[in-house]
Each structure stands twice: as structure tokens, then as C-alpha cells.
Image (cartoon, rainbow, N blue to C red; front, side, top):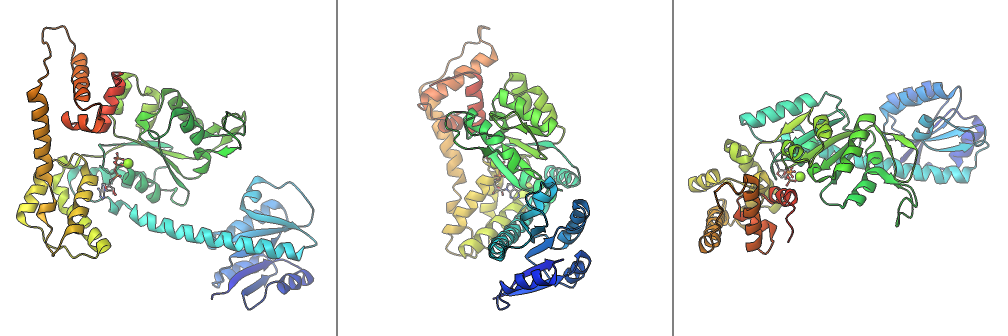
Length: 462
Ligand SMILES: Nc1ncnc2c1ncn2[C@@H]1O[C@H](COP(=O)(O)OP(=O)(O)OP(=O)(O)O)[C@@H](O)[C@H]1O
Ligand SMILES: [Mg+2]
């Protein structure tokens, strides 16, 4: 097993040998230097300590400068800082970097425990980072597949955003067009890639919960708030907060969000204290926000704030040539996951793939190909498992039977406005499907999201 590595900076001889005595050399590689200058040399020579015990000498400022310089080369190290005095107040900066403080004379038992805990913290940080390195290749601009003109435009924009320090942006597009993927790319290819990437689906939570999730709360802020809770704004500090389905956010909360973006400050629920944050907001939605603004469902100031940087993802049916990139990619992915070897697609299959309109966009394509690869029994992509034609045909059949048997009559005598007609059509579809939104959306050849949006807009209830 590799030895654990501890570096001790600036201790007198006795203290040093005291510390050394509690870390057996069988397990530990112990390094010591007189000062930061020589510590730098040691690190430059390739030593990578996981924990450093350093004495706070000179002024705090000078100490911090030294510390940062060293830290840049060994980012996963944890610092235990030895101070001469007891219980002094330190600057926030030093508080933030220190794993913990100890005073002289040293309590060796405590040092031993602290170093072990610091070591675990360092290892964890290193491991998490290697995960996020994997994430960062999953979320590189290259991972956004497609060579069509609309995709080139999107990728060009993502490329530009890499170097722009943005506080907020919006990604729009139908379901399955890659909004989540694009958000990941913006974070992991941008300047905040080493900060956290935190995701929240605004449609998934009721308003109050959404608010306390975002802003956090103090103990007793509302019934059930037993302890204080750091909100996602705080958790995303230094990184990105990805707010999915922003179109579903309540108007009042929208205005709090706008304020937080503009001032980069928030207040936990139940607290007066303002907390500074440094967070980039990426919002995404499948709704037409401009339309929602007109309808009064989305604040126009927030819309303008977000849409300074707007990435609009094209539907797959508008760029079917991208299938040539996407299809082989997903087949390769599922080949390797399922240990299959599909490597041939017949002309007939290609025709079906290219004819189909892909209402569920890239996600639907992925799912279809997953099914085909998993069920393949040779190296040919099995056309019988595509089931696209059937899906199309089934849609048409269902539509026909529902509307033929029981047609919908709408007077065109000027008594109804277009909006009223739309409402009547939606109500009829919902009625015929026992308020099954998915089914009704299929009848109306629209997406569930759009239908839900309209249901809200027209205040239709079951
Ligand atoms: N251009 C692309 N290249 C490669 N993979 C893509 C592309 N677009 C989408 N995908 C993949 O398709 C799937 C769906 O994409 P994603 O979840 O980002 O869509 P979405 O727009 O967020 O959908 P929803 O609105 O339903 O949340 C994901 O697995 C994603 O990685
Ligand atoms: Mg998504």
C-alpha cells in the first residue's frame, strides 16, 4: 500500500520529533521543512503531501500568500494550522482553507486524530475530482453530437460561452433536445468547472419547498423547519445552479430569483442576514417563454435578464442529417454496455429512421436504439424492434377513432375567439381520455409539457 504523506512546515526540533513519534514510518512518509520556501522546493521535486501541518508565522496575509502558492501545486492537500495563541479570531479566508487549528504546546493525540481525518477528507476530494473529470469529458462540447447547420450554431455559441463570465442564461428546446446536456457543457467547459454543478427541477416541487430548497432556512423559519438548512444557492457557491423547467416557477419566486441573480445576495428564510453568493444560473425550459411572458405566466424582467444569453436547441426533425452522427454513436454506446456487436443498418431501417419525426427528439432516438441493440441477435440492427411505423400508425388510428365516432363541432359564427376554441378542443381531448394528459397530448399531436402549460393557462380542471 502506498504510504500516507504528511508534510510539516516550520516546527522547532522538539515539536517536530514529537509529531514524528506518533506517525509510524511504516505507514507514513514524513517530510519536514523549515519554512515555506523550502516546502515549495520539496513539492516542486514531486512530493505530494495529503496533509500539511504548518505554523502560522509572520502576518496572516503573508502566511496566506505562501499557503496559496503552495496550494496551487497540490490542490487536494488539507491544512492543519498551528497557532501560538488560543482562540484567536482568524480572517474568513484562513478559516476557509484550514482543515482545523491547533495551539501550542501541541496535543499529540489530537494531532494524530486530526491528521487522520484530514487525510480522509483529502482522499475524498481527490476521488470526487476524478469523477468530475469524467463528467467534464462527458460534458465537453464535442459530446454534443451533430454536424447540421443548427447544431453548428449551437456549438459555436457554447464555444463562445466558455470564456464569458456569465451570471445567467437560458436554454430552450423541446423535450429530449439536450437541454440538460448543454447545461452540463456550459458548466464543465467554462470558468467554473472546478466549482459545484447543482441541479434542481422547478416543476418537481411545490412552491414553498422550492423556495426553501433554493434559499435555505433557519431553524423555526416555518413549521417543520427543525434545523437550519443551507439552500442550493449557497451550495452552488463558486459554481453553477441549473434550474430545469424554470417556466413552471411561481411568479413571486421568479422575482426573488431575479433579485438573487442581480445582487448576488440571498437571505435564508427566517433570517435577516444577507449572504453573498457567487453563482451562475443556467435556466432551462421546454416552454415558449416569450409566449409565457405575453400570457402573464412569466415575469418579463426575469425573461430579459435570462435571455441575454439564449441557447435554443433545434428539434431533431429539423436536422435529420444529424442521425448519421447520432445513430452510430448510440449503437456503439449500447454495444459496449450490453456486449453486443451491432454494426450493420439496412437501407430499409435507415429510411424508417429518417422518415420518422422524433417527437421525443434525441432521448427518444436513444431509447429506440437501446431497445434494438439489447434485443439484437446478430450484427444487424433489428428493424422489427424499431416500431416507429407502428407508433405512427397507432397514433393516427387512435386519433381517427376518437374523432370520427364523436366529432367535435365548433361554431365558426364569430361567437368564439381562437383561444376559446383551443380551450374547447383541449377540454374535449381531456374528457375523452379521462384527463390522461399524456394520452390527450398524443391525440392533439403535442407534447405533454405544452398541454400542461395550456391546461394551466386556461385554468382547466378535471
Ligand atoms: N446533440 C446530442 N448529442 C449527444 N447526445 C445528446 C444530444 N442531445 C441529447 N442527447 C442525449 O439525449 C438525452 C436527452 O437529453 P437531455 O436530457 O439533455 O434533454 P432535455 O432537453 O433536458 O429533455 P427534457 O426537456 O425532457 O428534460 C440525454 O441522454 C442526452 O445525453
Ligand atoms: Mg432535461
